[in-house]
Image (cartoon, rainbow, N blue to C red; front, side, top):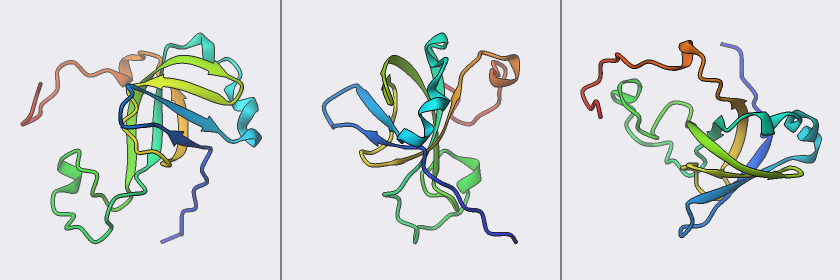
Length: 123
């Protein structure tokens, strides 16, 4: 199997007391931030760098456990503001220092929204 190599586009800065977090986007990706203010929410993909890789992975694909073959986190966040390459967001559940892999606008496209879904833990 071909080796996959990812590069971080930024880093998460957060503290235990706040409900907001900062995503510090690397300067070389500043041009990627153009037009972000047109959206209210974003999908953030990040590397869960504090996850123990030696954990049993049984049923990992059948739940939202952080223990995965590739510890990639995915969350929808609300954009509060942007100052240069710093995004202030609400709802990010990543630890401080987590590498950000990608940021995508949440568009509300029907393919992104499933209302009639099956789950043993349906809310």
